Amino acid sequence: MKVSILSIILAGILLLSVNSGQAESAQRNGFSIEDPLVPLEDILSGGPPRDGIHSIDSPKFVSAAEVDWLFSNSRVLGLEINGVVRAYPIAILNWHEIVNDTVGGVPLAITYCHLCGTGMAFRRDFKGTVTTLGVSGLLYNSDLLLYDRQSESLWSQVMGQAVSGPRKGEKLIPVPIEHTTWEDWKKQHPQTKVLSRETGYSRNYARSPYGDYDENGDIYFPLSFRSSQYHPKERVIGIEVNGNFKAYPFAELSQVKSPLEDTFAGQKLTIEFNLETRNGIIRGPDGEVLPSVNAFWFTWYAFHPETEIFPENN
Image 1 (cartoon, rainbow, N blue to C red):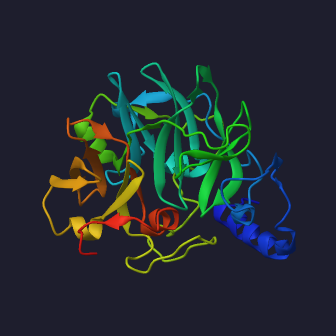
Image 2: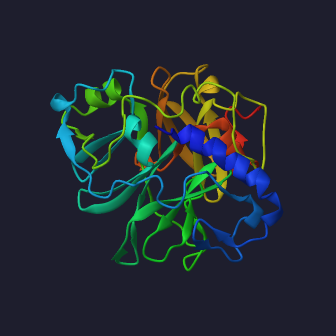
């Protein structure tokens, strides 16, 4: 019998309600959690066990010309490092959530949480030691908790920070990544390589295990903070500058032209966005691309309730 990720998530919710009286336990999915940076009772099982969602640790790639299974509007995460260009289809990431890769000589983890709509890339070398990241099966604010296989610390994807374990409090180094359509990425980067469906696992990459989750208003897990200012799944471009946070909702960006010039936390920013593809990047004062996150509104607000919002009269 085929079991979808969505059915596993729903089973996890039921398990949480049954075990609600055990919230003080410091054991989750084989991880010993002591004095975490976030409330222990908010670290929840997403349903799958540890490594029940398999990360891709030996990724294979094909040329853009070899890809005949992506549609023009298929979503991909794209990045370029040291002249090496790669695209990671969301259709594959839906089933694996993490790709441990090395791009242009840089060891990276490309991560994706469908529940939050967040695709983020991080370096996976810690003070000269390279490790891989895996899927813990745990969530915080509906967002996946990664774990590094060297120290078994748990890391919040959106926070980019270890919330428990030997590396608690340490920050991951983020790498800019674009969340766009296959047609848009291929047009910008015709030389791109694409993550192959030959992952070593048997999955139906033509089908999303999440159905219409991206469009409906459903949120499956508890959140620290909620806001009804926008639809929960409204996409925003979020950025942190010197400990300050700001969101650029596409609902607001649709009222202005790209690029948008802005000043936030004393820093000049240029926001380049594409309303059709719901893609955007943010550049600093010297034109460099800054790490930002393309996320659902509910996700950004849950982690950053103090966020500023464009335009300033929001």
